[in-house]
Image 1 (tube, one colour):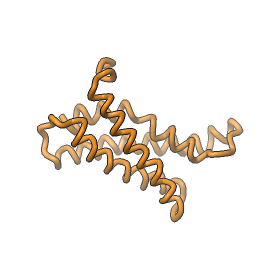
Image 2: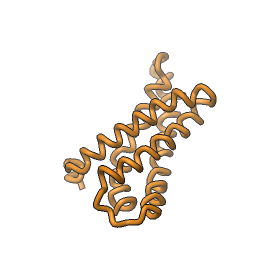
Image 3: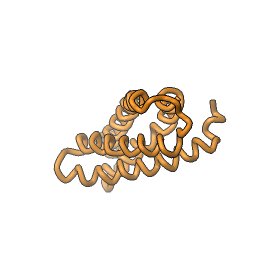
Image 4: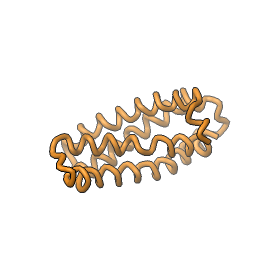
Length: 133
């Protein structure tokens, strides 16, 4: 399994996922103008997820033989797990760990960035095995 993380496909996944993560991260600032941090994290995740689906389908998993509907369904299921990871980590860091450690500047930004980064490996495996099989 570890060799999967040293493939060209994984590198392209990191690049496209990184682009989607930037969309996720950046859109959270926009959403935060109108909704709470917690809600903005979820909305930003959805925005990034749509970006990630399109980029993964076009650039990473081009050989997938599954229908777009099947891929989209499993993509959403894999991302339900990932959004839960992102939200739990973001909230845990922003409201508990970072304040406990005395961090008082860029708390939400740090928490959200770490929350976005954590599900990279689980998402790749899920998308490779289910979303774009």
